[in-house]
Structure formats: C-alpha cells, structure tokens
Image (tube, rainbow, N blue to C red; front, side, top):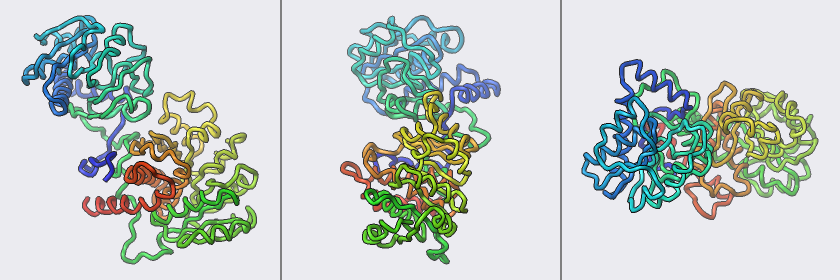
Amino acid sequence: MSMFWAPIWDQPLKFTPILSLAEMADADAAAVKSGVPTRILMQRAGEAVARAVIGRFKPVSTVVLCGPGDNGGDGYVAAKALKEAGWPDVTVATLGASRAGAAAQAAAEWTGTTTPLSSDSARGAGVVIDALFGAGLTRALDPLAESALSAVTAPIVAVDLPSGLQGDTARPLGQVRRAALTVTFHARKLAHVLEPGRSLCGEVLVADIGLAPPDAPPKLVLNLPFNWAAAIPWPDVEAHKHRRGKLGVVGGRIASTGAARLAARAGLRAGAGLCTVLTQPGTLAINASALEAVMVRPFEDAFELEQIGEDYDAVIIGPGAGVDAETMANLEALARTGAALVVDADALTVFRGDPDTLYNLLDRDDVLTPHLGEFERIFPGLLASAPQRVAAARRAAELTGAVVLLKGPDTVIAAPDGRAAVNNNAPPFLATAGAGDVLAGLVGGLIAQGMESFEAACAAAWIHGEAAAGFGPGLISEDLPDRIPPVLSRLWRLGAEA
C-alpha cells in the first residue's frame, strides 16, 4: 500500500467534495438560517483546531497569531480550548482588534496572555497557529503580518488556509509560509488540492463543524475510488476475451514505436480483452517482435484505418504518432467510426494551428489527455485567463464536448456536463518519459470495456498514480504496466466488500 493513499481504504463510501468560497459561504449561511449561530460554528471550528494540535504535537509553548476577522476568531477559540486542556504557555499575538460579532466575542472570552503581533511574536514557540487571514483574502499580507510569519521557525498549523493563500485560485498573494498542518472545515477548498496551494498547506485535515451535506452529488470532487469503483467493469463468470472489449492503439513512427506499445500493454493490464497496435507496414515487424499478448494489425492509409477502426470499442491515437498531416488524417478517419477515442500527445499538437477542427471531431465518449504544454497548444490562452486549472479544464471540456484530462501534479478531469475531479495521488516519480502513454492506455482499456468515459478517466488517473507510488524512486514507464495488477486487486476487493 502506498504512502500517498494508505488511509483511503478506511474512509466511508461517500463523495469528497471540493468547494468554492461561494459554496462554502452558502453552506455557512444555510446553517445560520437553520438556527445555528455563527458563534457556535466558530466554537466548533476553533475546538477542532485545538484537537488537531493536541493529537499531533507534544505539549509545547504555543503562539496563536490572530487576525481581526472570523479566522482570528477561530484562533481565539483554539487558544482557549488548548489552555483549558492544560496545554502549557498559550499566547495570542493579535493583529488589531477583532471586528464586531462572533470574532469579537471569541476575543473577549480569551483571558490568557495577549500581545501585539510583531516579528518576535513566535520566538521560542514550539507550535504556531496561523489564524491571521482565511481563504477569502484578496490582497497581499501587510508588512507586519508577513514579517511575523517570516520569523516563525516552529511548525505552523494553519486555520482554514495558510495566510496569504487565496482560496479559489490556489495562488499565493505574495510570500506565504508553508504549513505543516492545515485544518479546514466542512470540505476542502480549491487551494487545498491545486498547486501551488496544495504544497503550501501541508497535511490537510477536514473537520466536521455540523454543516449540512449537499443535497446532490457535488460537481467537483477529490478523485477517490469510491467515486467510480462500482463502475469498473469486472468480468463475470461468462466472460471471454471478445466480451471484455477491443482496444486499438495507432502505432508510432519507426523511431518512436515504443510509446504505442506502452499504451497497449497498459490497456491490456486494465482489462481490455483484446488489444492491437494498428501499425504502418514499415513498422509491423518492429512491433510484432516486441509484443506478445498485444497483437499487431497493419494499415496502409487513413481510409483503411477508418475501416479497421469500426472493429474496435476504443482507439488511442497520438503516442509517437508524429506531428504531421498523416496523424491529422488518421484522427479524422477514426472520428468517423463508432470507436471512442483517447487523443494524446502528437494527435493533440498536430492541431495547434487549427484547434477548432479538433473540437469538431470529438464527442462525449472521447477523452483528451494533454499535459500543460499540449493544453496551451490546443486551447491557447485558456490557462492564463481562467482562475485556475479546474476552470480551464471545464471550459476545454465545454468547447470540445469531450472529457479533458489535464495532466500534472494536480491532474484535473472534466466532463462536458460540468463534473470535475482533482487527482492528488501522483508522486513526482511519474515525471518520466512514457508515463503519459501508460495513462492513455489505462483510459482506453477501461473505456473499451464499457466504462463511461469520465469515470474511466478518473479511475485511470488514480490507478496510474497509485501504481507509481507503489514503485517509488527509480521508476521508468516500462515499470508501470506491471504495477497495475496489485492496484486493481485492491480495488476489486474494495468492490467485493462494499
């Protein structure tokens, strides 16, 4: 079991939502409207922070940095709860007087040591609680707050988010100190799951403060098996290879044939009953000599590829394909078949001068798997103009009418209907040539078996990350397909026990 996701197998079977600041404000407002005062919510939040500190640190001198708003109010509650629990030497360093309302009441109920915030506030502290500013901050920290945080040498526990990190964009508004632990409330926010915010948050703990769950499945979730494990097409007792899906992979040029083979092997490992590399006659012998269970099938031109493509449930095109007119013609031919398409690598880049043509070739069963550079080529300017990667991927899915899997350390999967997931289990060891080809193969292998394309893309991204995390340092792409079966075995057991 990997170090990245060891706890998830013990989590309850439910979606893990990711909320915008507006959605979180709505949840707070609904609680207040139902009769739960803001003061009670603040009490629960601050006590959750205190419990987290007690659970993760030995009793040490603790300084709580409190701002003037509700985030600071949470900090005062946490300080009081720690003091009442017998925690030694708890001090509050305050940045101005708390505003009226729940925060002011929390400040008034703190009877311990209070000092003005300064660059020396955290000197000698064993733990520092950062309750200066929350997720809704829209400006850089003022010099006093920045200097106080810059001087901290102890582990930082952030309340909701590290101060200076914007909740909806996940971008720092100037200098932001990394937290060892971030305690947030009700649900993760975008800054907890998207880079660079995710790295600045450290460990993220979501505390239940009694807000009502959403009435419907959330549109944005953390990508975990419980979102899609029930949809994995496990074979039944009557299964045979022809019923488990046929996957085709368009082979690459003579100098780059390995990419298609990696994708094909991953598709076979994902469970596709039959997998074939569709190859030009000039590379037939190369591929045939390097493959065993994966078959090879030659085609002369796009016309013949279109005819062959009708025989497959899903076809992957792009790995090692070449950025030329032939790749463009092959994709156009495959788009006229009934096969679901996984469009990757060169089959994306070839449309950089005419992305609208690519958009018009796709439908809801197709999946695009760009990395950041490829995304910019086919959706020029979209990343720069969007608030963050989730918004960009959603807009790309809307433009194409297809599923978009935007690869990265915080991979985003978006469907044309607005559903989206953020995948956070990919280790840095995946930064190796060919890893994306394996991911494309996983997506294609699951779709070929009949899995819905958005769920297949989510499952593939998670399995890919988990397989890599299970291997660790020294990983190369050839290692990945053989790491897939242990991950699938765990998912299979999870489904059997659910």
